Every structure is written in structure tokens, then in C-alpha cells.
Image (cartoon, rainbow, N blue to C red):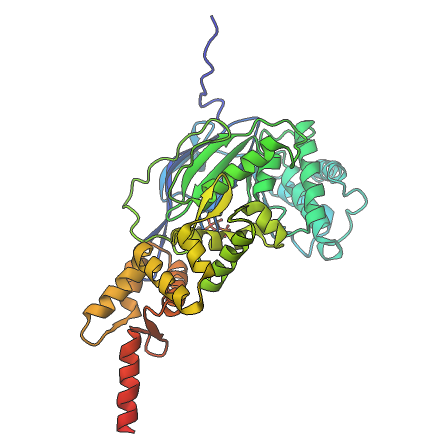
Length: 455
Ligand SMILES: Nc1ncnc2c1ncn2[C@@H]1O[C@H](COP(=O)(O)OP(=O)(O)OP(=O)(O)O)[C@@H](O)[C@H]1O
């Protein structure tokens, strides 16, 4: 009889059970950054964690690696609570985080020294790992004498020298130029594939979709407010992976679709899916306003019209020499306003988007106004409040307090800035920055004329 392969706790290295993270706010509100989340790290996998900025990728990495304690739930290391046992992990950071006053060799030796290893042994092990990561001959150099790529090699050597069971990496290649990143990525993959390093699992946080698809055996995409797993799927393509091959671009497109459709789990997954766990805390009230300017939205729509109304977002970013992270907010904003739809990783303009892009400025403002009030709760609320107040002004704080319940302080401020930007453009309201109040445009005009009469 063939036994079903059941994943037990002895196989799982790290298991997060219903972990959550809250941060306190000065206003005494608690902001939930991670919703209750289950996640396991098993041997033999490179796991990539993707998600929009602020979705909690680093927060989750920190909890899984024992750097930070969950506010609720627990993380188990081989079945035992992570605080109660010695764990063997290391972390590579985007910023390299080297000690500038130590030589390359001393930097690499540091974690072994901290673990109490004898000088001879730690020196020998460090020299070996320096050789493995291509730093042979650089042991006496100081970090400042090295290029970014070489510094990150030291970061890798220092992480690998302890022979971690799980290697965590938080955006390890994003501070490097494209070619250096590409080289380091392939070298790391080679070490992993050939089992030159005894590491059993790699967990990498990245915002680079291609990087995730190039490296990972499993990709997890987080959504935000609060951070939760939207999709978690396996990538079974053989290495080396061809970026241009259809299965590769299919996965890239799928991830795009997930990232650009914050409220929907799209069909046509590239492989088996574990659907996201439902958000079991308070239902989201406000949509997250993507931080895009109306001019940017119009520009994107015009470009789409030039592409017969439809274009692959990924290629569009490439053609425009845009970082995809910069294009996303514009795509999301146009989507929120129902000016475009995302289908199969393609952005397709809607009739409303078409009309908006092709109209003259006043008509554009009118269409934007209509779409904003219809699709954006915050703008609808501000407008209604202004219409209903006898003096037609409302303090910003009134809305800040409501947003505060849902977003961090910084995000609340950014949400407000974007709402002001959109509302002003659409001539829904004006904003008196000195008094921090929303004002109906005609009221301001009236106030001005009163001033004129007085003057
Ligand atoms: N110490 C803290 N106090 C309060 N809020 C925090 C703290 N650390 C993180 N946050 C908030 O938690 C949210 C998630 O942050 P985190 O850095 O984990 O996201 P991320 O997905 O890694 O973002 P990025 O891709 O921009 O690095 C953000 O809104 C951030 O402002």
C-alpha cells in the first residue's frame, strides 16, 4: 500500500499558527499589520514572499525568523515555540548591515564568535565560505573598499557561515544594479541546487515578480490592510528558467493579476492554489487609495488607447522604463475608478476610461468627479459631509479619525493627501491647508466675495 505523504511537524521546520501583528499608535488605536496567518516552511523549498509595499512582508519575515514576537498566535520551530528553543536561521538584509569597522573576515567570523566558536575553527570556516561566495583574497578589506555587489557577498558569507537551516533574505538584491543582482542570484541558486550549502530552506522577501519566478519553488502573495495571504502556490518549472518561455510569463502574468486586483482571487491560476484565508477581523471599510495622480491615470489611459486599448502591464512598464512598483498605483487607481480592467495581466481600457482619456479637460474633470464619488467611499463621505454642513466646511481631522481605525498613521496621512489631490482635481471640494479644513468650492468663492465687499 502506498502511504499518503502527510506533512508532520518533524518535517516542517517553521510553522506559524494564526500569527498576527499589531502596532500601537500614539492615538492609542492599535493598527493591525498582519491578520491571523498560518504558514509553514518545509525543507527543500525556496519560498518567495511578494506583495505591495506596506503589506507586511518584512513584518512576517521578522516573526518567522524569531526577530520579532507575534502579537497573537505562535511560531513553532520543529514543533516547539520559537522563544523556547535554539533556532538556526540567518538573515540577509537589503542594506547589507555589515560592521564598517571590521574587515571582511572579521564580519564573517562575527556570528561564529557570538556562538562561542574557537578562533582557529571559526577562521577556517569563514575562509571556506569566503571562497564559496567568490571573496577569496578580500578577507583583509573593509566594507567601504568594496562595491555594493561585493558587500552583499560578505552579507551572504556572514549568513551562510553558521550553516543556517533556514536562510531568510529581505530584498537582498534590490540595492544592487541589475547585472550584479542577476549574477548573485544565479550564484546563490547554483549553491542551493548543487547543495554546496547545507541550508534546507530559503525564504526571500522581494518586490520583484520576475525574481520570485526565477528563484522560487513556492510563491506567496500578500494583500494589505491588514497583511494576509492572497495566494500561495508552487512553481514547478525546471532551472535554469527561461524568462521568455510561455510558462514563465504565464506565472508572471498571474501574479500581476493578483497584485492588481486587490479584492479578487483571480481564476486561471498557473498551478494549484490555496485560497487566501478570509479576513476574520473587522471588514474593510475604506478602499485603499492608490497614490496616483489624476494626470498619471490619464497618461496611462492614453497609452492604452495607443495600444488599441489593451496592453500587458509588465511590458508597458518595461517600454516606459518604469519600475513596476511605480506603475501599479496608477493601474490600481484607474481600476478603482473603473477606467480599466485587468485581465490575464493585460490592462484593458473600459468605455468610461476611453471617454475620459479622449475628452477635453472640463469634461474629464466631470467624468473623474462622477467616477470618484461612485467608487471611492472617502471622497463620497467628504462631499456629503460638506453638502450637509450649514457652513460647508469640515475639519480634516473628522475623517483622519475614521481612517486611523484602519490604517497606520503614515498611511492615513498618505490616504488623505491622495484624497485631497483627487478631490481638488475633480473640483469636488477644496482644502484649506492653513486651517486643515475641507471647503466646498463655491463657499470659498462666496467667502472671497464677502472679503471683497468688506474690503
Ligand atoms: N515598528 C512599527 N510601528 C508601526 N508601524 C509599523 C512598524 N513597522 C512596520 N509598520 C507598518 O506595518 C506595515 C507593514 O510594514 P512592512 O515593512 O512589514 O511592509 P512591507 O510589505 O515589507 O513593505 P515594503 O515593501 O515597503 O518594505 C506598514 O504599514 C508599516 O508602516
